[in-house]
Amino acid sequence: MDELQPFPFLALVGQPELKTALVLALVNPQIGGVLLIGPYGVGKTTAVRGLIDVMPLVDVEETDAEGNATTHRRPMRIIELPLNARMEDVVGGINERVAIEQQRVMLDEGVLARAHRNLLYIDEVNLLDARVVDAILDAAAQGRTFVRRGPMTRLYPSQFVLVGSMNPQEGVLRPQILDRFGLRVWVAPLMEREHRLEIYRRARSFRENAETFRAAYAEETGKLKQEIVAAREILPYVTIDPDAERFAIECIQQLAIPSHRAEIALFEAARARAAADFRISAGIEDIRRVAILALRQRRSVQIDAYAETIATEDAVITRVIEAASGQKSRRRRATRRARTTPPTVDAG
Image 1 (cartoon, rainbow, N blue to C red):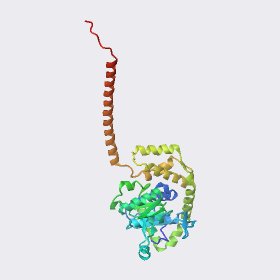
Image 2: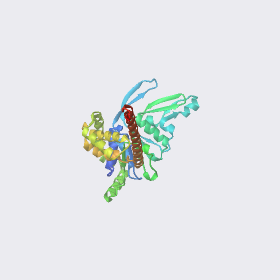
Image 3: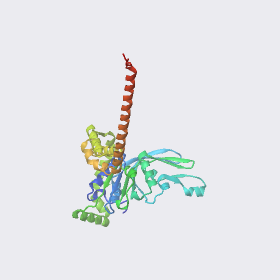
Image 4: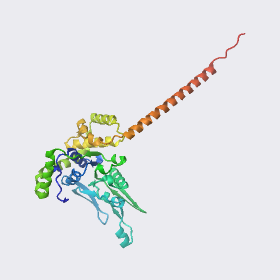
């Protein structure tokens, strides 16, 4: 598919969860990214690439050769990470050409630096080298990338919207990596006959004349882009209603979710939804609408079982300590009574 002519985001048939999660992530990158899970051919990559039409303008700083910084506005871009990406490609490394030709060491920026203020898309994230995934998630959390090569170091800003996709048939993500994605979307294949026929018809129309097909969605796409821009401006002023906070925490506690990233993703997604609806207060309904996206796949049977084991052990230890403390207290009281009780005199 031509990157300049992506399939329109709003032309995707069905998949409301998918569309909602991606729009919320554009509104509020603090959600922590989106993970799209589903089989091949259900539109995961098509949806992500279609976001290019609704991406807002962002402020970008650039430094010239003399060190002067200038700021200008440009549309967000999609940076796609190759599956065979090495650590040097991601975080940056030594420019080999300069090293060979000029006999000097120069650090080049990597994908994470280029992703700053953009959307970083990782297809088949579950097949990527674990060290590379860790580096990306650390950069997403910290908003910067630190590169050290011998005595040389550089610090790059790397604030981006993170989107990953995977096919669970090819393996799962490690729990600590899965936990780092704020929202998780199950992109299920559409089974209704009319939906599948409509997918075929739209795909065929797009292949035959992409420009005409895109024009049919141009007005709706333009409106969505304006709404995203407005929502990003409103977002800093959006707060969570206290009742909604209590409701969210109660749900998380009842689900026994161990990770505190759950409430962060849940609250930030609720704030984004309120902003997208042009409101400055997120309520219980906002929590309800985003809860599945934020809380899915966060429960852990292993952690629950381990926590029960710890609780059982703690109870045994506590009983022993209390019993020992009671015995010691009784001995002390008996000793004090022995010291204060006058000796018995035999009158005989």
